[in-house]
Image (cartoon, rainbow, N blue to C red):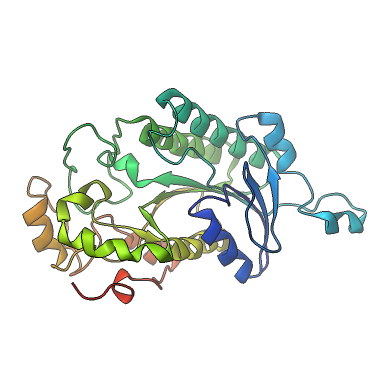
Length: 298
């Protein structure tokens, strides 16, 4: 069923693949961003989401000129997907990164629920697990990394995503809206699979990403599944692909390269340490882009 979706940050690395995927499923999309998106059929509304007034207006406007033909004002929005953010540390000063990510997320969720939009999907991050942008060589508490993990980031970006999850939960409890937070792994675009031989050859280089990743196109599928799945209230989902970026079986690999992190349940032979079991079981996610399809066997 076609939905009207406002997508923030659609011009970014993840968004520019997720938006076309949503269009392919018949949805109508308005992109809110500070830079344009080259995607036929999608208008970009230049919006500063740290400004509450702009955010409320942007979520209650026509998607394009064709909306004016109805004479009935802007059509209702079915869902908001909020990916806009300062995408990592070391792009802006730490306080600016934290402020932009936290305030924009608060504004988007507040505007959505007060405008009667009952489905909001926000981009959280693998960085909430505390190792990606940690000072020094920090170990994960245990494997697999699942959604009930005691997340403990120490950096401004990961901390902003932790706060955003709490903001989402608060609004879901207060309003009864469905608000799903996606802990997105290292996003890989189709042209980036040439990096994987180096990943495989140097296992310690991928510890900060928990030897896991998400294909940008599979991320589009996850977003679509979230839009279709109603009634879950507040939820956190790891948004990653199925398998570890290594040639060894997962448990043997982790015992070698992460010996201080206990394994708390049996892992599938090639299961990613940042596990996507929940999105497979709850949302019905079926991976389409395993890295082995694109990388010559190492």
